[in-house]
Length: 226
Image 1: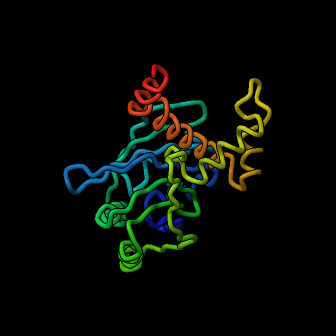
Image 2 (image 1 turned 90 degrees about the horizontal axis):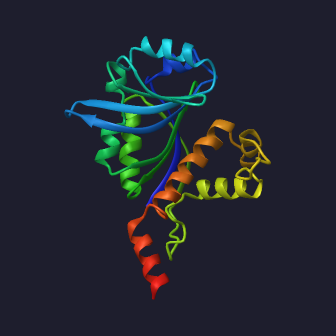
């Protein structure tokens, strides 16, 4: 399994993001709808979100957005790709080659993705597709996924594990907190928004694979009663 980190510069939401440079998008998922439509779900954080939403409503690459939820200073939106946005979507090719997105964020500088591919030929097919469709792709890292062997990783990526460990050691989870997201971001050399997203995804993965994992829970109870 190959893990890749790369940046895409394509038209999807480019107009909205360039007019709202302080806003960051955190992609949750994409889904094919009726075969020829693509629905996307994402969080928006930072900047003037009212101005962002106004620009989003006028963006030609998506349909009228639906605000699903608001949590603190974050908003969750659902919309569908349209026009040039649908034509330039890499989602169908990503599915075709067996790629899986693990982290996707977007700013006015482009879309940053951390994606796994089954092998190098599948990555090369995806890369060629982007180039053939005039989608700028800049590869930053390509490396092989390391197995945790005994399963002690609980499905966490290296970045998520590092973020959780850093937050724990810095007292982020203490009451009251001894550090802020800005301070964690500085330690991890990422933005506060990226640190928040990484902690949230890491915590979700950890919960899913521990307290919410029925197999682990049953095994633990069996060991306790043995």
